[in-house]
Image (cartoon, rainbow, N blue to C red; front, side):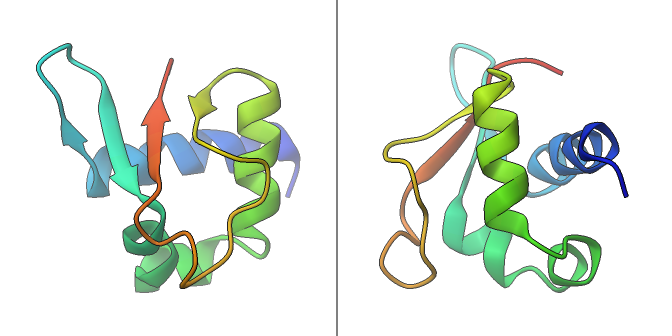
Length: 81
């Protein structure tokens, strides 16, 4: 799969699993995204897809590298569709 396609799938999954805040922004915890069975089957390298989306300013989150367990409570915020 190409990166652009994986990022579009990631946006769909964040919308599916996330919640909308008062400002209308959708966010999801990394642990929720990582533990979801559909995401596990969809993304070969979830962390790599997240990093690519962050570089393109489609999502934002604290830190550079997210690790399962350690960063489960980190919010991934959707900045654009």
